Length: 478
Ligand SMILES: NC(=O)C1=CN([C@@H]2O[C@H](COP(=O)(O)OP(=O)(O)OC[C@H]3O[C@@H](n4cnc5c(N)ncnc54)[C@H](OP(=O)(O)O)[C@@H]3O)[C@@H](O)[C@H]2O)C=CC1
Ligand SMILES: C=C(/C=C/[C@@H](C)[C@H]1CC[C@H]2C3=CC=C4C[C@@H](O)CC[C@]4(C)[C@H]3CC[C@]12C)C(C)C
Image 1 (cartoon, protein in one colour):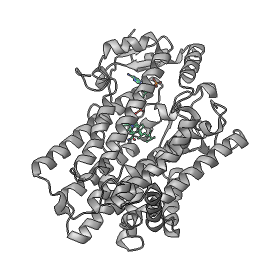
Image 2 (image 1 turned 135 degrees about the vertical axis):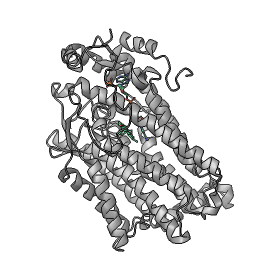
Image 3 (image 1 turned 180 degrees about the horizontal axis):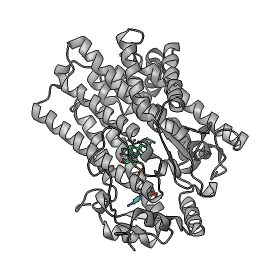
Image 4 (image 1 turned 180 degrees about the vertical axis):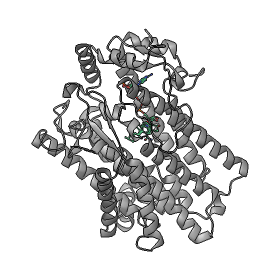
């Protein structure tokens, strides 16, 4: 069945006549199908220890080995013990969690929390939550106010010499250590709070596997909050990672201007790229509310660590590479620069409008759609009369807009954004290419999980969707 031609209100009423028993049984199957992901407890331990190790290794290559891959033989080390001793020395010297780093990190963290609960914003509601009797949670979407207020405050602090933004790059290693430590502490505090206080603090336990390590990694709660409105998942997914990434790039631009008297096209590129991403997350915050991460993904180490430390301190190696060198080293041709700026902007357009189409469609179906005037509101971000499949379980699958051409074209676009961030640095170091390579693996994993989840949840209707839209990443190709 398709929902062609009928009004959104009629479609919404159809969605509301959802067979809850069918939805519940489908959802249980979805959970059961994904019960032990990431290799279970052993995989969780490996990822909890491996993630910080990878971050420190990348940083040591960047800060102590001119951006080249560091191997034991390159140290003339007699063995691995010498190699690890060298790395330990680098971390102690260059990434010690100093009082200054703790002060900067925690000030930014708690000021963002203060903005979250005080600044004006758009109020919306999330998807109906099965375990809350199909009730939805309220969300206050004021990240765009927080973003521009933060920019204004950072500007005043820098210009008045109270806090020079170039400090972020000067103490990058220490800030990274503080972020890693805080992520582990936050993971433990939120897990313990939910398990011990069972609903009186943060959230009630949700879909626990019974294995403490695995549940700490995946999360004990689905929508942990401080008070009624401070949604920790939304707070960590938007404000901490992408605002930090953007300010690191601005830090590089200010440092380059102070040293050389101008900002190179390459540093300007990473500032634009990280502005676009951070601003997208902020101006589209209400469209994050109906996503899988908000409605299904529990809040544990995976989301906490990667939002708090992984994203800002590994996705930034393009910035670190450019900031550490004379712009003459990467003075590319005008044609190459124009190509990369075009690739970035076109990829961003598809990424923004595709995510917008699907999530605004979700809001329309649940009667939560509210137009906004945040910048930028792009053409084709909303499908006015969407065609969609009205599924047997009461759900809906959009079959127009970008979703007519490829089921995950926003993944493709987002990947090409990440690739452009690396290409702007040239080919002098492999470190800026960590993000696109890591992201490729993340997206392949997410699409595999998602296809499995949608097949279980939508059954034959998902097969119908795949018939209507047979391409996954690239229209008419793959
Ligand atoms: N930079 C980074 O580190 C990361 C970036 N991202 C980006 O975030 C964005 C969102 O990614 P993600 O949340 O993983 O994936 P999606 O936005 O694709 O969300 C998947 C869910 O959307 C719903 N859905 C899928 N197809 C349709 C359809 N045709 N009509 C209606 N609903 C549909 C299903 O959920 P249901 O039907 O149950 O509602 C499905 O489970 C992407 O652009 C991705 O690149 C993601 C991860 C990390
Ligand atoms: C999984 C992680 C992080 C994921 C986020 C970066 C993305 C998850 C949902 C994404 C978005 C949803 C809808 C949008 C509307 C568009 O108009 C603009 C873009 C966006 C806000 C988009 C942005 C990326 C997400 C927030 C961690 C583990 C890295």
